[in-house]
Length: 309
Figure 1 (spheres, rainbow, N blue to C red):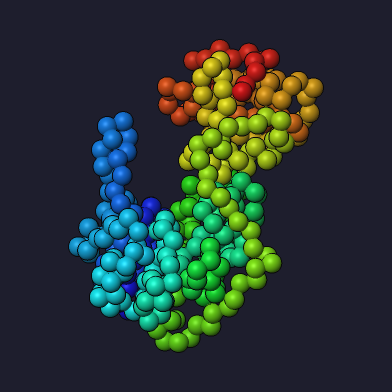
Figure 2 (figure 1 turned 120 degrees about the horizontal axis):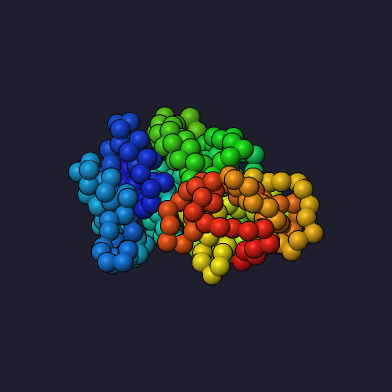
């Protein structure tokens, strides 16, 4: 099938590659404009742009894909379908209705649950036992289109935002290939979403990871895993940012104020929470490398009674 691919971050790359490797013809890749990053403010290609260049496929980077001038150029490509995966722009009606099979979105949740920008991280943060990927026929609403195919993924007990990202990207790639094939042979039946079951996720930024030790330990442990590797959950230790990468929930109660280091052992330390406590197993102090707590404690004198935050 002839398709145009719209995507930007790493999550989209595996989907794009799988579609091309399956024999579909990619006429062009549309991705967000390049942006300067890092201390040197050097302009960096988006991950999808790099993948497209590697396959010698034309790359287009409009500021707004739905603008009339660009839409006319898009029409001339003659694609059968547009495949969208974490593109980052809203598509208007003129684009959605342009190709024969419309626009197909690959979304990293089991719709209608977790519509919106950060479904992968929120699934971990909220302690979901199951997540998955949905392909849908895009409409003008936010992830409201008819469901085409779904596939579930069971979350591991130690699932992180990063590990689930990798799993769903792989599942999404296979599901995208299956969806295009089913559309082409007419074996797919779109199913309307039940809007009454819909939930929404907003964008996550760095400030979201600031740990509120007054919350239950279990909730904080899920936050730590959900924000690993980005943007990370963190607190303050002696005025420096302390990223927490891995922790274990302890049911024990302590009368110390939330955020207090209640005990320190050779390999870890325990912090009191609003309910229960967290044993800190892996961390990163500002200016230092990420390490297990045992290594950290060999070079840092931490005493019980120290307050975090």
